[in-house]
Amino acid sequence: MAPASEHQAAKVPISSQKLEIASGVTLLSGALDTASQTTLLGEIRKISSKAPLYTPTMPRTGKPWTVRMTNCGPLGWVSDRSGYRYQPNHPETGDPWPAIPQMLLDLWDEVTGYPAPPECCLVNFYADKARMGLHRDEDEEALDAPVLSVSLGDTATFRLGGLERKGKTQSFKLHSGDVLLIGGDNRLAYHGIDRVFPSTSTLLKDGGRINLTLRRVTKP
Ligand code: MD3
Ligand code: FE
Image (cartoon, rainbow, N blue to C red; front, side):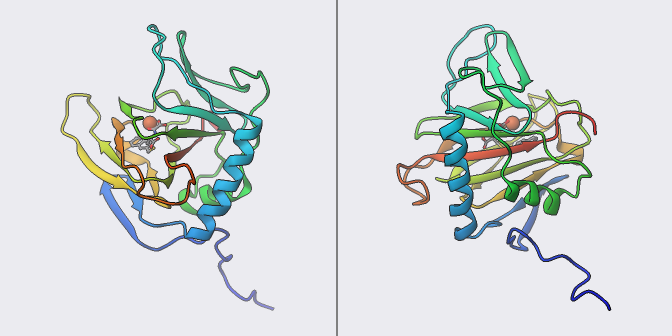
């Protein structure tokens, strides 16, 4: 007998609103409904209770970041005076990072179609004044894999440049529940977060913004 449907039902409800903001960069606006955002936030709270948010420092200068971070997955992305790298343990507790929640693994499969799971989910927490300067994500070996970002909480202004630091940039707002898929031509594009707008979401009870960045690090 034929299955009820050729397609497996989506495990994570995703809206069909897709906007290609640059070659290979697709904004899935309002991709996650409120119920999914709340469930995901609960998963992130469990992760941060085991792997606490910490304040990373900048390479060379040791200046603190304004964004606080933690990770889940076999490899976490860290920044300190020695540089940027992926490592299997939390820099302060020394414990292995918690597992990536199944709903994020499902979202990765549904949205990217990449034949291997992500190895890192970087959790960035932005309080009101936090920002992230223009940079490229270039510490991964698997540069053929896309990067998937999920925004939760307050709205932020995201800046997308080109492949050279001095090039033109465009700005977009990222809202709670938005998913951004970055691949192809712009996998190595410069990007950053200019500012977060306080009190634009009620998802986080004390305000602020969380961004989850899923990445494949090693070649499958
Ligand atoms: C565009 N985080 O952690 S995610 C990062 O909202 C980072 O916290 C931002 O950039 C944040 O590295 C933005 C969206 C994103 C991620 C990777 C990209 C956009 C990108 C790579 C290339 C171009
Ligand atoms: Fe980045």
